[in-house]
Amino acid sequence: MIVNNIDREWKPNTTVAAIVERDSRFLMVEENTPDGLRLNQPAGHLERGETLLQAVIRETREESGWRFAPRGLLGVYLADKPGSDITYVRFAFCGEALAPAADAPLDDGIVAVRWLTRDEIATQADRLRSPVVLRCVDDYLAGIIHPLELIRDLR
Image (cartoon, rainbow, N blue to C red):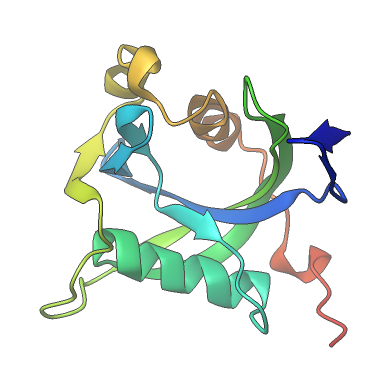
C-alpha cells in the first residue's frame, strides 16, 4: 500500500482491553478522541517489553483508576479502522476490578469512568469507540471465555 507517496510496511496495532462486569454493569471509560467523545472499555496499546497481561492491567489502571485482575481471555478481535489503513488486533480479557488505586491520575483524554448495563452501552452504539466494544460485552455474556494459559510469552 502507498500512503502519501511513501512506501510503508503495514503492521497491525496490538491493543488490549478489560471487560469487567459488576452487578450487571460493565466498566467503561468516556474519552476524547479525534472522532469526538467516545465510550470504550479500558483499553490501549501494548508497549515494548510488556506481556499482554501486564499491558491490560496497566491500561485499566491508567484509564479507569481501577486495579484489574485478569481471569480469562475473551477473544482476539481483528478490526480495520474505517477510512484508514489502520488495523487493530485486540486481545480482550475479562476479570475483576479491585479497589481503585488511591489518587490514581487518569490518562489524558479520559473524561469519566462509568458502570453501564449492556443495554445502556447498546443504546449508545453511535458513541462507541468501535463495534468491537459491544461485541466484547456480548461475547462475555455468551460465556465465551478461554483460560489465560492460552497465551504464551516466549521472550
